Structure formats: structure tokens, C-alpha cells
Length: 123
Length: 123
DNA sequence: CGCTCGAATCGATATTGTTCGGTTCGGGTC
DNA sequence: GACCCGAACCGAACAATATCGATTCGAGCG
Image (cartoon, rainbow over all chains, first blue to last red; front, side):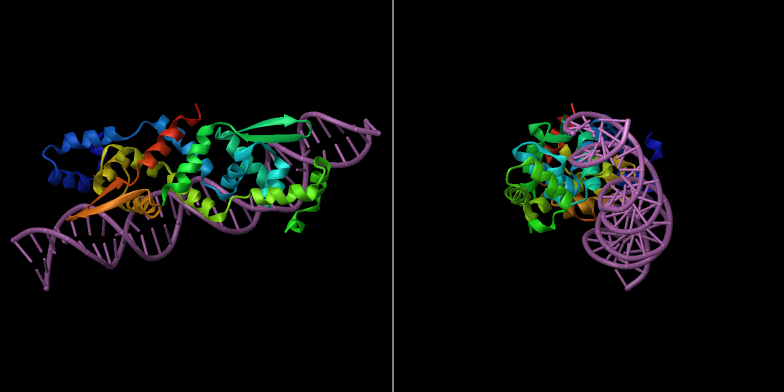
């Protein structure tokens, strides 16, 4: 495991620490587990697009059908549909079918927290 | 403004609402302002990458120098450096130079909140 | 100064994400 | 059933990001 580290890095660590091998091991252990990272990535990737952020900002005060979101985004139907699908796949949004229309809503208030925190973050 | 909407969408809204023009206008006004969306996007794009998420997870309990992060990620120096630059540009991370080394740390506890919320979100 | 080393930048290439016309699907109406 | 309409899906063209070797930069040292 620790022997996959490039020699240059090992040498650096040898200068930095008394027990480079121990430090190497603890550095490896610092790595977050894959499931945790996967969950975080799923969410952040879904939020990392202007259209999708605008959809969520529009859904803050209630559900809307796909055709209305089309107006808010001012984008073609197929484009809006694919973004809605990504948001749904990421578990950020839920849909409800009523007759010919499909209504979308934010699935969890935690999403609103994410939007709020991100908005303020870079002061 | 409302006349840029495709005719098909207008027709849809005419069937959905009594005053399609009013609804159209309020839909447009639902659009979040650009500054707000920009701020949110900057943050989410910076977080939408596995390497960068792993860096932040590693920085949870204190600062680390670039060469140590290289070990945590098990990635080449230039790759790590470019990710650190993106995190810094997004205002998520701060750096501090000490001699030949550069130490990075999370710049705001709000970042930790984002990581925590995202991890739990998709239950 | 000349040298070493950690970090930053450059740039060509590879990978991933986005757009959107065309088509299909599913419900509703007559 | 035939038709209409909103939404979903497909896939090819295009755009944005990521990767990483090579080079440069900048601090420390002899």
C-alpha cells in the first residue's frame, strides 16, 4: 500500500517527519471512504449547472410542471427534461404525475440549506 | 419579453391559466437574479469533483501541505496543484506559505456544513 | 551565485457534460 | 380506434473539464 507512493514524495516526508512510514499510513487513512464521497459527489454534480440551479431556485416556493419550468429557463423542452431527470436521479427533486402534466418539487429542505449556504459562502 | 416564448408554450399556458400573460410574467420574475446564481454555481462547481471532495474531507481536521495531499489523493503533483487552485479560486480553501511548503486549510465552516448535508441528503 | 526542492503554470490530449432536433411514450378526448 | 399534447428518451455535435508531463517559479542553502 505505502509502496505505491512516488519516491520523491517519500523523500519529502522523510524530511518532514520522524517516522515517514507512520505518517504515510495515517495520510492514507485520512482518505474518506468511497461511499461517503460518492454521496457527496452525486449531490454536488447535480447542483453544478446553471440551468439546474435556476430550476431549484424557481421551485423554492412550490411545485411547478415541466412546461412552466421551460418558460422560467427559456430553453427547449428536451433540454429542460434532461436537467430534470438529472435532478431526480440525484434525489434532489421528486416528480408527481397529474394527467398529462408532470409536476416537480424539491424533495428535501436540506436542498434549500445547500442553496442558501452556497449563496453566502464567497462573501 | 413575454413575446420570446415559443407559441406552443404560450398555448399550453392558455389552457392552464385564466390569464396566461400574467402567469408568463410571474414565471419570468421567478427567475433568480444572476449574481445569486453565479455565487451558488461557483461553489457547487468547485465541489463537483472527486479529487476536490477528497481534499476537503482530508482537510476537515486541520491544514495540510500540498505534498501531503498528494499522498492522500495518490495523484501526480500537477493534478493536485490544479485542483487546489480551483478550490482557492472558489474561495473554499485558503493557503499559507511557510518556507518551501504551502499549507492549505478550509476557509469557512460553512464548507463543512455543505459536505455534511450533501453526504446525508440521498438517505 | 548555483543548486535543490516544493509548488505553480502551461499546453496538448483525454474525458466528461451539455445541447437540442427528432422520435417515442403515455394519458386524455372524441 | 385516431388524434392531440406534454413529457421522456435517443444520439450526434459541440463545449467544458480533467489529466499530467514538461517547464518555470520562488524560497532556502552552501
